[in-house]
Image (cartoon, rainbow, N blue to C red; front, side, top):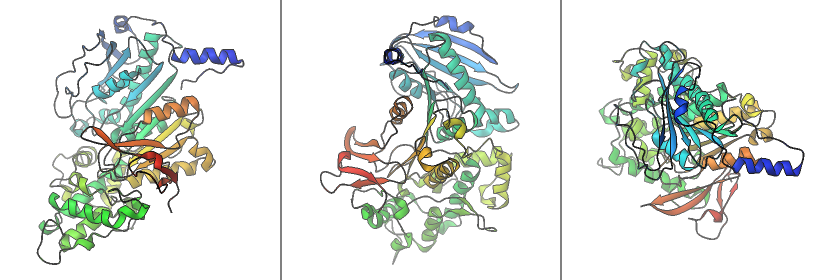
Length: 515
């Protein structure tokens, strides 16, 4: 990890502070980086991109590169493309963007979603706009399917953790070569979903790669998560009568809100703390004819299974928690007409090595064991011992949407509590690790609750200034305009209304333990 300098005199401290905000002279030209020698790495291109001139590559298959948003506002930057081959079967593409001017002295590693298979130009651009040098990787394959894993165990390891580490190491090395040996002051990693797992894997397995890390809605227990996800498909496809069509989701969501929205003292269309909500979908069981406003008896049982934890039928052991009340509008992902693609890919290509494996044959006992065996310690990022990362000053900010309909938020709560238990004291742990649960937020973004908040700014202040985030102010937008702000609180605290003022303004709330 890169450490800030410590000086004994106040004058030296002022000089150090000035250095952190000044723009260092570049040590190399952009084009000269094409001859940079790095282990297992071939620099395939190093070119200066003029301001507003970046055009993203054409799409390349499902999950491949796409045009995305406009990049006309980007300042000039040095774009470096590299291929990293740590094994004979590796083919990891890495891209690094380096501001020509106004670099902030920092590096940001960017993350992937799903099964990756693409370079995230939008994330690189977002980092560039903030003055960061940044890196991205396709994790060693092209396209958003796990079919690449069949017969290629090294490529699977690249996806699971090695590619992100290689991108981080090579990205920082390229940054140092461009700006000079002492120029890079801090490095950060920010990711959500698969990116959240990547973030935790970095903290656990490569504790020296980054100074602070943000892990959102992490898929860090994939060997069990995928069983639970397919289990939901089994529940709604037990028979034709069990299936819950999407037109019934609003009725279930409305019923959950009617029972639990006001538990926090504010009726705002959001369940602040679903753990306090004891919603039973039987409350909207049809009394007469079936309609979009009610559930039949088989649908009630299917909905109960969606909310319930997946358990081993033989031992009773919890495999993975269930979805929370408030998640209903996103149920189509796991409870739709087909089983969830990410989970199916893992079980077909990673576990059973059979592209035709039928999820209706899932065994909640033996197949959990098979998934664990196939994943080993690579597919998951569950190690709660973060002390090697935290001891030198590392900071970890976790967040998860309470209404996430794809990755169960309770799993992140479980991981956070396990990480705290590994620390010497709860106080020391919360000085280095904090979890922010986001009421009403779906998977990484979206939903009824405020879902826009700046985690990168929070960890900058935390790592560089020692100011731990006591809250994150989140905003909700409708038609491009902010219509609500609300504080997100360090778990287990929740946003509590002060009793006066608009409930759409964050300043009228404080963070406190649940009543």
